[in-house]
Image 1: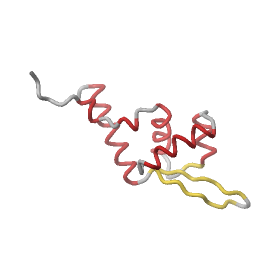
Image 2 (image 1 turned 90 degrees about the vertical axis):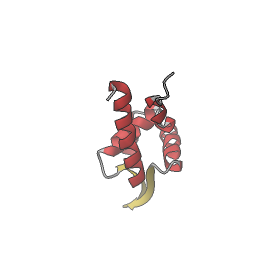
Image 3 (image 1 turned 90 degrees about the horizontal axis):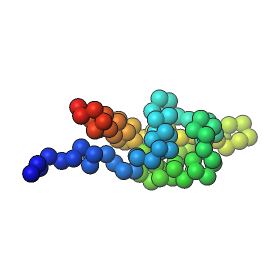
Length: 101
């Protein structure tokens, strides 16, 4: 019997959601994004994006900041340093699971 660990066990389940993967993937390539831009880009409802951002924020994968822009309050979202590192680790592990390397 093999004692080797199944590589799929290294994949954190918090990141398996297609919406959360899309959010993290979008944030991976920018310094920060406005809530509205994320919502439009991902084509999801305000409620769904809020819910998923809440999950990611509780896990300390993202940072959320309210900023004033003219007379409006804008919600800015960015990957935390820990979030960026964890997401890159996740992608590398996913690659190993998918391609066996």
